[in-house]
Amino acid sequence: MVGSAIVRRLDAETCTILTASRAQLDLRDQSAVTRWMADNRPDAVFLAAARVGGILANATYPADFLYDNLMIEANIIAASHRSGVEKLLFLGSSCIYPRLAAQPIREEALLTGPLEPTNEWYAIAKIAGIKLCEAYREQHGSDFISAMPTNLYGPGDNFDLQTSHVLPALIRKAHEARKAGLSSMTIWGSGTPRREFLHVDDCADALVFLMQNYSGREHINVGSGKDLTILDLAKTVCRVVGFEGSLELDPGKPDGTPRKLMDGSKLASMGWLPKVNLETGIRSTYEHFLRVFHDLTEA
Image (cartoon, rainbow, N blue to C red; front, side):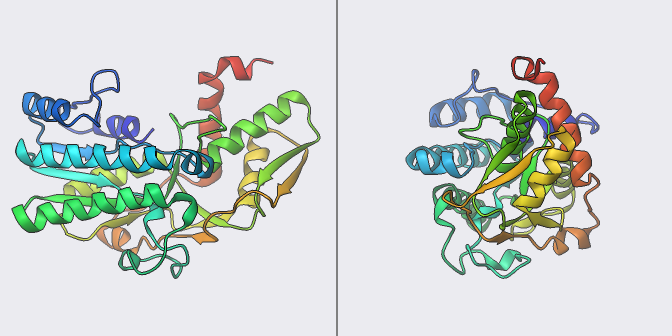
């Protein structure tokens, strides 16, 4: 999702875009990554690749989430240094911050408290990536920077109910409930946790902006600056999808972090602000879902 959005955004720039699909390159394979970087010699790298998923996926595959993400980032960052990449931007995640960090979360909150247990494997890998960029900057003078996007959504999202994040999962559940004529739909947890969401095209624009305008050691938050409860998010999704049944809560399922709103003031002070409001973004994402998943959407 993020990689595709970055490619769309870079189409507006004067540059040659280099990509490598999963079929072409296993980013966990150090020798393969080293060869690809040596053969292609990119000037700049957006490191968006990662193994990602929601609470269920993190709980089911903790070793995969930790190992795969460590290998991906370590291989690409090291190969970028060896091949002379001028600038690299590493994408982290808002889950790097402590579970009970003061809200909104400032960049300085990193490593100041315990992580959220439901996604600590992914968070630890992402923290390692941030620190690896800092280490190459300190030891070698590499212009490697990091950005911390909030919860992202949009075209290209994962709608698999076993591995997806909350927003695409809600879109699919609401769609299937409407199709089946159900009178209610169940959502995980208490519905009270608050989350911030950013459309992936806004994220891609912010990342290009940072690549062009930032060269600092500290990672930079990338968010919308607004949050809402999971219950209110579900109501918004149902309104967009057209599901008119009731929403049932399942308090037996985990909530995750109580609140996760990032402080985006540093990026705003540089001159960047998001453009896509949440309901408009959800509507375009649902339209994408309808176009792509024909087998699920036929009446």
